[in-house]
Image (cartoon, rainbow, N blue to C red; front, side):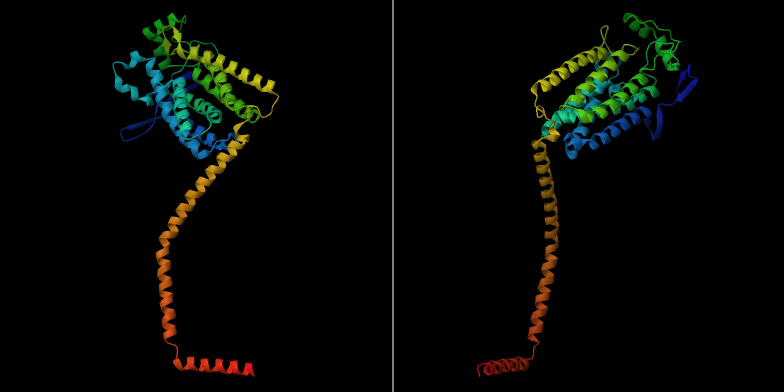
Length: 366
């Protein structure tokens, strides 16, 4: 049980990291919130397929692969830059439910695995990235609340009314090793004073980013534009917020995620401006035309629908073949009955019919 207080707001929360137990298995709020973020992101992504020129069935494969890649990447990134914590207890590396996931590692892993599946499924990568980046923001906005329950991802001291404190905050900032690490970064902390709720800042930043990208999505000029905007937006927010944190992953005296964030901001902005400039100079509305508006996409849809129709017909054909023996049996029985009726006909009646026919023919000749 953790206690978190917001003295300036008069709020106190008593938080249990474990939501419920199934036998000896403890299900944590951190895991639940991460899972919820993934599911909502997946649902949103599937709802946007038609608008971006992506076939939903194919995207499901990309999303599932991306989730696995994201989880593995997030953990490996965190472990790589916190090796001293894990080197004497390798078994704890797999305990992701206890926290310790790096978002940039998750993004890298998800994009790499997702891109591989995109290639295997013969899809267009940029429209998929445009959909995925909005899903990332949904997952990040929700997942950060798992940090709140675990009382992590907080910052240095602040006098702002929404500053937070608690037992874990005090314990962390009182630790001599942490104090020494922060002093090397030029950060001095008071363990008893309130700190920045960095998890909240990032959650709100991601939620706002999702809203802005969603509203802009119908005005995008080229595939991949939303992804570039996401990279710049998230990187800018993360770079600033990371500078406030007291638990950053470090490479020497450099905050790894902060450095990566600012590099990505610069790269994304340069690429975005360059592409927009090319579009403007081209004076051609079809230059870098959105894939969803191309004939190639229409052909892909037609080919996919034809393939699905063949599968359906094949299944229907198999079902019909299964039923045919019963139909043949019925036909044989009917034929037998007809033959029996013919054999029961009176020969005398046949002779009379024959005579009548002959008489009719003679009258006609006369």
